[in-house]
Length: 492
Image (cartoon, rainbow, N blue to C red):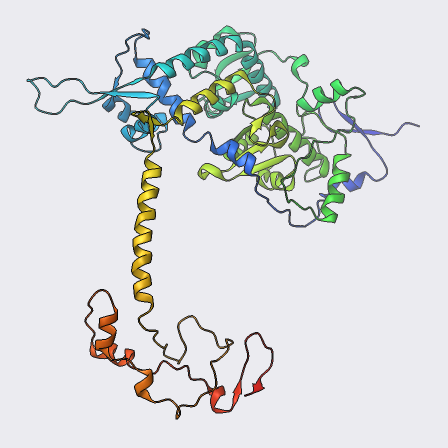
């Protein structure tokens, strides 16, 4: 007699065994999963610092600049400053552009006799930026169908087959869509997308027109089909890559091995019928996040984007905790004052294993951003000059400190030197009667002669400086002393 089956999705059936009640509860061990830094993945995130703002500013300049590459006129600084929030500039526009002298040129027109105010500068992109921009346009044209397919598959992950237009705008950079994709890409695929009002009627959504079953295959299933022997609903284990020095507890490792053996549920199947807070539901959620990151050209995105997207994909709350449970699949980077979720298997150190053509273009922009200004054949490195000045200042301070160190050591209130503990060894045995005040006190005039800079001492400071410098403890009076590092008192 065949086993009965329960539905775990719109088209997925799981055999009902006698121990079916076990999947009703979440069996994750209540143990701490450590977070270990991965320097390679952190560098992959950190090297794209200011890249989005740089790219937005470049597009803004080219939007206002004539198409003639030979002699562009540029955009006024006032116009750029008015659109600072739209361009996501981290600070003032003029300061941001001067960070990249090989990308932007600042030109000041001659002042006229009619105006009394000084002329405002104009900004234009350099020839290097224009050359990479032309390569980027060709890369966009060659990958138009790929961009449409990735956007279509993202809509297919949604149970309602629609996503807000504002959410797609947030993911536009990660999806590799052009800045004007609503006008340049969506109208060319009327069988895929359409713009429709949202359920509230106050916003716009991108709605799916045609569901393509041939695209409803996840990256995990593609890899399993290439290796051979995969059947729908079979068990698939996610690739695991841990940071160097990562150690997983034995009980967590056992849970992970059992969790990997569970049947793989496609992210394009609905997971609303899965038992809540079960290991099956968690594996489906991991599969959805895994597929979303695979659809992005950089294989990474901010954690807030995933949380917002998960609300429209039907993912349960607690996505941050789920990502922390699987450090071998996802890496959470804290660089750039945000949290970025990175797909581990897509990277080897800080480089993508399979690089999208648009990512190659972005790496060229990064190369231009990091170029230093050259003057007379030498690189103008402000940081090195600043560091050298700091080193020189430190050397001067060290010389002054060496002159002041040999003056005198003053007792603390309780008879110890500053920073000395009760467990340090005392000096050779001596009593207060054997040492006179004349041999252990310094006159204020002698102290002033030994300090390079003249000082003026008050009456209280004079009394403090002329006090005894011998460390007095109660153990000396009793004839006991404690040797350094010893655990017992010995009689002197």
